Image (tube, rainbow, N blue to C red):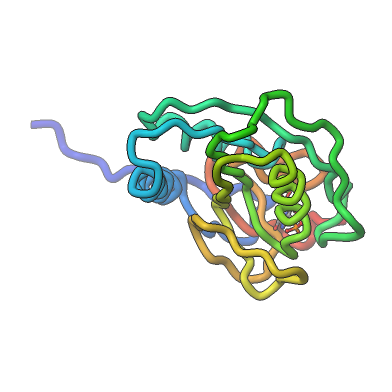
Length: 189
Ligand code: 5GP
Ligand code: MG
């Protein structure tokens, strides 16, 4: 029998201070969020409104865990620029293309921080008279809310740290990291 060699733990990316969630932990949680969605929507159809670019990985993985008929639309919101704190008022850069009148709508975003982005998008969607409106975020920085908005489905509650990976960027980089981690402050320059 060949001797089993222990696999080395994957090296942490040098620009990360720490890893909050590994690829495996994210996958497991995404799968359980899909079950929560199933419990809410049953077998019915719903329309996902994904906030790009940040929610791109989460949306793609979540959709593959869902066997309901789903439609997908994306909204692009102006981003932070190259900073690590929410500043100013978010603006819609590219809006919906699908008709959502009388449709069940689920807004999907990467992270809920001050709440301004989701409040803006929820307001915009609500004006179009959907049959129902819910929201789902992978991460929630609970202590940071500046407006009254809570998501219906939350993956992980996290502390007030600037996180990157799994779709989340710093200056448009790191979206491709398979894990979610805290950006090394020395890199946030
Ligand atoms: P809010 O409008 O709730 O303050 O911010 C939401 C948006 O800010 C998210 O969709 C995300 O794009 C960005 N954001 C908030 N916190 C973080 C973070 O820790 N890391 C990254 N990369 N983006 C964040
Ligand atoms: Mg975003």
